[in-house]
Amino acid sequence: MIGKKIFEGINLTVAYQDDDKLIYPLREANFYIRETDIAVIEGVRDSGKSLMLKVIAGEHDFQKGEIVINDKNISNVLTEQDRKLWKLRQAFLIPDYYELIDDETVAMNIELPLILLNYSKRLCRRQMTLACEAFQMLEIRDVKANELTPELTFRVMCARALVADPRLILIDDPFTNMLRYFEIESQRHMIDEINFCIQVLKNLNRTLLITAREKSRYIYHNRLYRHLFSKLILT
Image (cartoon, rainbow, N blue to C red; front, side):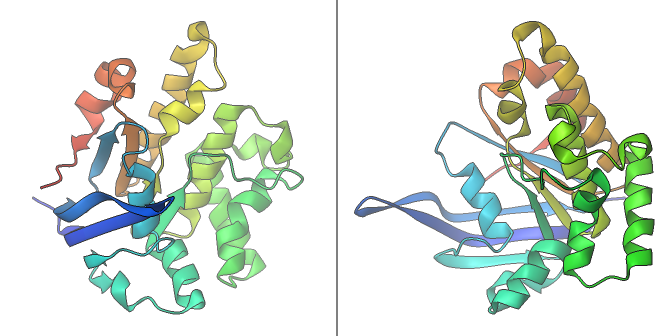
């Protein structure tokens, strides 16, 4: 059974300022993602992949068109409070840089979206525990974020995205980011870690949109793209 459309970009035009001119990575693009899809946007550096995710997450304006997530139109997201709630409940963005609070525990970092949503302490703790169970991190709940390895940091960021139960999880170029921290001989371990995190989210029926540079295809061709990803087509 084909899932319903959970995300749709309609006649979407996106631009950003580069010195004194506007750059248009997307012009009147139309694309969609169905529920529980794992879709990937591939492109060269500075092609607008990260910008596209920021637009979907309500962090960057678009010039023309519509963005609809779960029948909610981002064009109607006007106030700062609306944007904050949109980012937590509709489209949760995991950026391409590590954004944990270093001097807080893993548990607190995972609970952060729920704290911002004013959930009770009991519910925050419950949701955090469930996320830690899913990502096999119960034993490190009380470890400070600055003591984590890069791969565990990525795992915590995925768990934090999970707890607020957003309709769409956006992951910005985890491949290139993770490669910064590994020598060639250790990259297989890193690939396994990303594969594990994405597989956990897939098993939980989450809808994912992930960006990757074109050069990542060689590294991940057999392990991820072929088996897990449906390529996002921009028309």
